[in-house]
Length: 211
Image 1 (cartoon, rainbow, N blue to C red):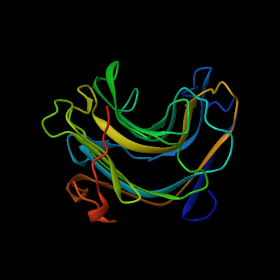
Image 2 (cartoon, rainbow, N blue to C red):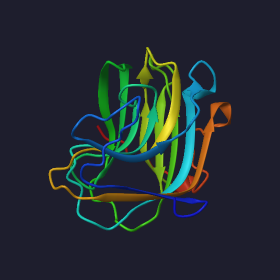
Image 3 (cartoon, rainbow, N blue to C red):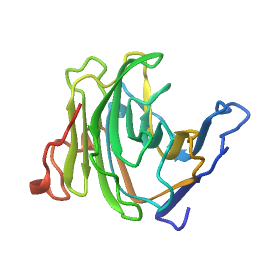
Image 4 (cartoon, one colour):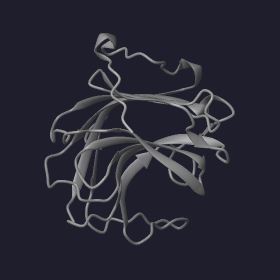
């Protein structure tokens, strides 16, 4: 934590999480934090909204097969992720089915690398719905809508959710360190959450979903 409003996470080669109750598998590295309370999916926890600023520090290009900077966690592999997959191109990934046998879909993938050292304004709105009648995942970056997914998202066996951010990755082939900063974080659950428009700059929103 750099100050009362800015969080910095850096992961280096071999940084594995260990505690009396859990140890990451060999080949998994992380530096992250999450909410200390879970939110029941039967109540407000199925609808999640977040705004924050994010900056990835200059450094060697990411070579980790998967690297997650933000996730809505419900147990098992997260059903919503802001992710990088072997490069510096941001992706939005969703999953559905069950946590033990998920179906994964990339709903947005950058065509160009993100800009290192730049603060991005991020906004996320996710409605978990394993059956798909009301599920969605919307993401805005700097006021432009980059993901506009509607359909199944989340797991039929999940009961709670919470947000995690930082760096969580498979050990990279290049062995590089990776650091990300966050500030101005605001999380909301339930009906107070956001809908399909951006308060930052609604006129700039454009659908750019892919795959």
